[in-house]
Amino acid sequence: MKNICIILVFVMLVAAPLSLWSAEEGAAVFKSSCSRCHGENGEGKTMGTMKMPAVKGTKTSADKLVEYLMKGETDKKIHNKPVSGLSEEQAKVVADYVINMK
Image 1 (cartoon, rainbow, N blue to C red):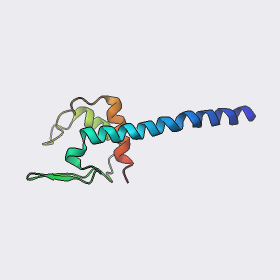
Image 2: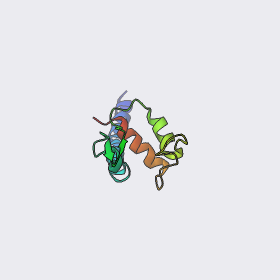
Image 3: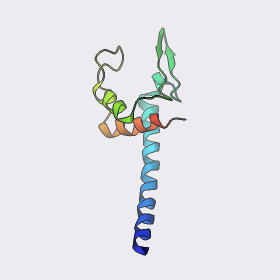
Image 4: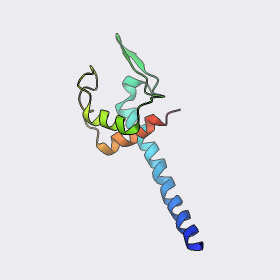
């Protein structure tokens, strides 16, 4: 039992910084790649005559967001192609960041 407790503490100590890094990385990717259209806090933005949607409070799953960022959707005016320069890892951390926006 003592060994299990030691292992759990070790895992928690390793996992906590990784999840913090992921959140920080997600915020950085959002700021550099998404915020100019979706707003600094994901609230959406008007650009000229076009209203960019809010992403804060989205009901879309993180997996679907990753797929959307990596592949695009051909029936959309914007994001009809993959987001250029975005790796799959970056797509994952920004999707998690968006899902957890408060």
